[in-house]
Length: 363
Image 1: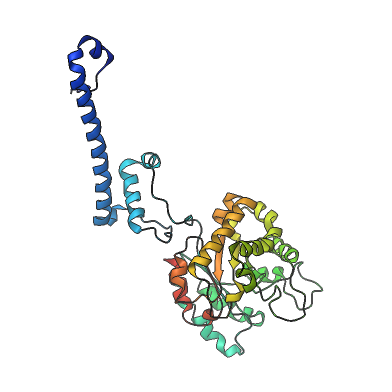
Image 2 (image 1 turned 135 degrees about the vertical axis):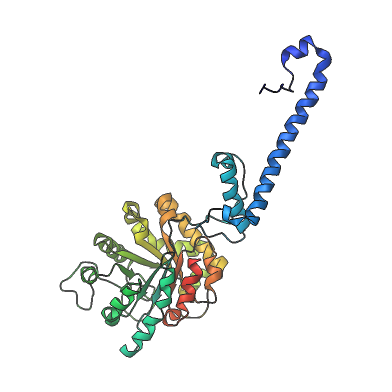
């Protein structure tokens, strides 16, 4: 096939045949306008095709930010296949309401039984509540924190369901003369891979004249846990007077509880081994829950601070759970927040609704 003539005038045309210059300029403008219209039509076709033929669109594992529509996600995926990623990266695209979690940030839900139940005879029913979680374990990690006396009793039954058991505390230096303490060495020997530390009820919320666990002590515990190959659920949060002063005061309180572990996070290769459980203390066990907007604002502020104080890789990879009267009713809306990676559940983890909470974040 012969190459079609170029409608745009060349310099020689302008000098040798001046009577053609105006016609060819007009033809050039028309040609470029038609190219633009054709490109726009292809993009509109892509959007329509994604709705009519969803099987053409590769599924995405990333949860959408509030206000971000599924149509945007599927249209972008189809457009990438039609035009290539380089083309899409060269044009502007609508911005989401916030950073969405990378596919590598797997949601995680924990049930904290605290000092419950009173009778061993109640344990089988509590364990059975988690049976339905097995259907979601490919999309969500699940763990339970039984009371210390019950850990060994329920561990194997939960493990058969694929649910991890995480003791609610540990000491800081292994086995030896530590009366009343539990060592990570013992947990590891029993086949457990997770431990929770720093809960507000151990940071001074008991209301008793006992020393609160300091930030320095918790950093020492965290390093000890990681050195022994276990995963750590690291709790932080603020009391009501701090929340009432606004997000700046809330972040400052959370930062004070995280500052001592910055060097540990910087050196940690697998960022998923530390899970931050953010629990507004004023919402724990009260039935009062932070609004999704409050929870997302705080989670994002924590993640942004980690990006600055540690590095962006850690901020992108670390999971941040929400705790504070999370239940089956509020879990779906909280799960839609892009910086909430799961829940640390208290009272609701003693009920069958724990499966509904896992299902909400696993979608």
